[in-house]
Length: 87
Image (cartoon, rainbow, N blue to C red; front, side, top):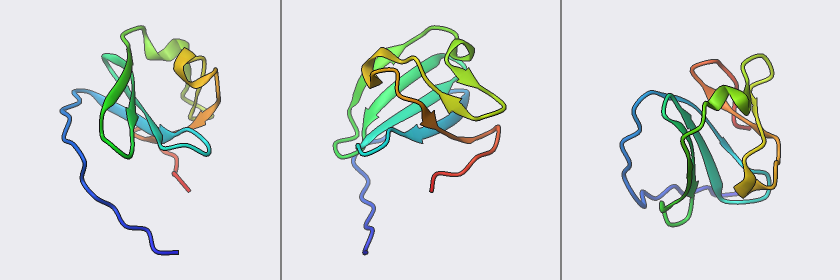
């Protein structure tokens, strides 16, 4: 398999904590001190934003983010400041 990465957009995200891909999709969940965002990995477009406290939907021990309506409350494995991997 040949994975090719192409830059599609640039977004400044202050206080970036964790990121994770939703299973079987190109949606990227971004957790920061300012809330949660969902980006389309193919276009780079920000498609959703929730400024609520991320710790309502993120478990620092399991590194799982959930309860984000856009992603049908799917549990998303994350990686970042608290650890984790994206494989």
